[in-house]
Length: 455
Image (cartoon, rainbow, N blue to C red; front, side):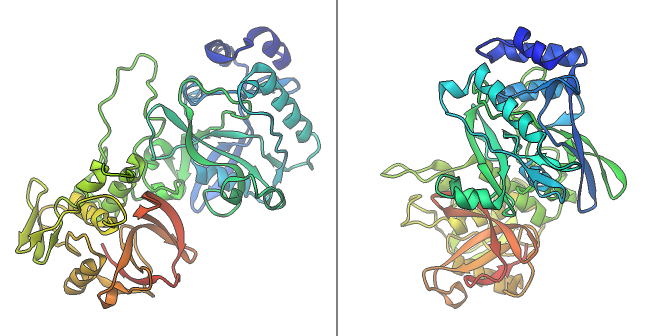
């Protein structure tokens, strides 16, 4: 079936549910076009779509734009053996040696950008660009799509991508969020990762369906990416966020399936076989996904306050009991009274991470404190403090100076958890950063790094 004919006769003017049904019927009838590109990320070999999903024939096809995240999930279910990609995988595709940028072809936002005409106009423009690139090149810059991201916002989906060249990004830095730097920090995009589109009902002319195949090979052995992306020891290969709590949007319900149970931070994680550091990374990533945020005024975020519930000043933290409750020798309870700037809570988050992940019988590498200085003192006694020249392992803590003070000398400090370290930088998750929990890359040799605590 010719794509132009299908688009004209089967796709409704308002897109919406009729559009999704037309796509699913075309897939069932064998008219879907998926163009795959092989990628090697370290010793992981996988397939990712090099162009958005299309309907038609090799000579007459239409790229499917104007898709909601729910539509993409339903399409993935119909195609089988494909899944939502991660930002790391998409960035790797855009940085392929044979990649060549097309577009971007931006159009007006609002109602005019959520129409059949706008989606088709975008398709026509990118297909025209495809004809101009050199033979053998991989065109990138088709538009945006949806990605797996742990920072869940109920009712919304995480949009990302639309890669662009460095020259374009520099020339248009004024309107590109964050200067257009991509999630990996290695290229440029029009759209950074954000939970901004409604999961069910947003139809945008630039949103296409990109998938990666669930079947891959790791060190030559077959692996299912749906499992790998949730494995704390392996997820970092394709996820900037470490292990993810899901392999598709958490609100997606496959056809005929009843609602699932709430997702726990350690779902499908064998705690007894997972090192403490990786447990801490998983729990901290889950908190990042919950996105607690300071509340201006007299009210305070109860989740942020809960991080300091078990903290004490003085005494020695001995570990946890069979119920996961802390066991102390002395000390006075010291919980934070607020979530504002008068009560910095980065140390409380690091402490609650340890308490939640520690198993009965394990020796804690530090105590449960609301002060970075006290974390350092505990780590010295536990012999888990490492010099700033040390390369941190997943789950370790970065101890930083703050406002000219040095926590190694009894002054104020800041602390964040380490997800991974590579290439002279580390990916950190820290509380009390921009009034919430943030995740970002930092230099291993930054001037504010004073020491590390191994966990």
